[in-house]
Amino acid sequence: MENLREREFNALATVALGGRLMSSFLDKSRTIAPPGYNRFLVPPAALAVHLAIGQAYAMSLFKVPMSTLLGGTPEDWPQWQVGLLFQVAIAFLGISAAVFGRWVETVGPRRAMFTAALCFSGGFMVTALGVWQHQLWVAILGYGVLGGCGLGLGYISPVSTLIKWFPDRPGLATGMAIMGFGGGALVAAPLTVKLMEYYKTSPSNGVIETLVVMGAVYFVYMMLGAFAVRIPAPGWRPAGWVPAPVASKRVTTAQVDVNQAMRTPQFYLLWAVLCLNVTAGIGVLSQAAPMIREMFPDRVSVAQAGAFVGLISLFNMLGRFFWASVSDYIGRRYTYALFFALGAVLFPLVPLAGQSGSIPLFIGAFALIFTMYGGGFATIPAYLRDMFGTMHVGAIHGRLLTAWSVAAVAGSLLVDYIRQYQIDQGIAPAQAYTQTMYIMAGLLCIGFICNYFITAVDRQHHFRGEATPAAAAE
Image (cartoon, rainbow, N blue to C red):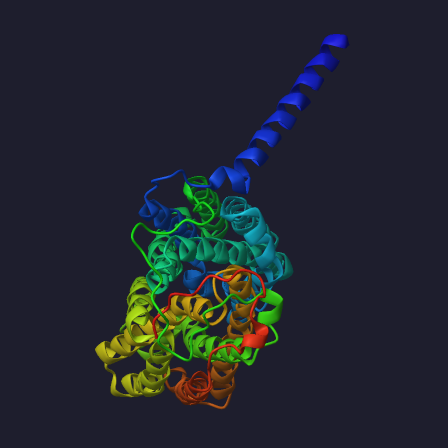
């Protein structure tokens, strides 16, 4: 008996010691880079996390398989209900980023990335349970709520870190951090298709097994990023870099506290700018695979639809790096003006391409749209840095991402419900997107106006302590 108790005590002591070691390893102080550390080793860590959570952009590939789990019977979930997983996940991305933004700044990126990995991967496992039991609320709780929290924590944790590493090129920094999220579907789309084909049997379409495997793979991949991430020492600056004088009335040269930022009109104008840009893009993104098949019936297969999702993911990713880097030269305000102006022209081209039967025009319009959609996400943290400084940019970014939550619901509902309403009225599926595309173009025009009225933050909102000039060029 005593030997049994001794073994139990030793086992508990080992677990407690392991927990303390892990907690110590996750401490912010353990992630401070030594002198001479190469800052270009940090972007791959951010990229690992964002490539994993970017799987959200390939979630539309689960719509058809998850809506036919019971063989197309009336008890099957309709596609719009399956779409709730994506909508709720993006909603909780914004909510968790807003709620835990200050916590991420406090505990550092490594602990935040570790927590994100647990939530995001756990969401896959719970969703698999919901599919197995055919309980939609369990699936939504898994991918939507738990996985959505993982999305939010994983999204914001690398951004402020890279902005601190690259004060000389904030647009480039955020582009490197966020390009992975846009490119996540480039990896997830073929992986999803291949796994479902591999695990498909007569009684199963392979969805459950695919969710479990993807959850495990993404956990390992995200942990690689968490272990590799580093933060600069206090007061660190790139060798030879001197902050340049700010030459624009639209850039703030001081620091603004996160709570004070919420009292400025600039925050809400930027909130509207992000929300309107994302609403337009995310609505069509959530329906990308079904849309191309419905607009070009008998010409596009399931595999080709998956390839299309991967292709627009590639342009989404490249646009994040390209436009964020461009914004370092022409300024964030002019970059967003281009997004809205070009997007208002490109969205009406989508139904025109369907009516004319031109697949190249359809793909080309989508490719350009999603470079700017991704570019908007990558440029907004640098825009915030221009407005509010670097002191709480991560926390401010987290709160601004509630615009993404609203846009995810609004954009997806606009496309899904207007499409279904028009089909119910007897309109062919190929023509059911025309009205929605014109609405999206109108939203982008409103965004152009909001962006036009953004100016520098008034001095009354500046932090009264020591401020570091924001070396941003407009």
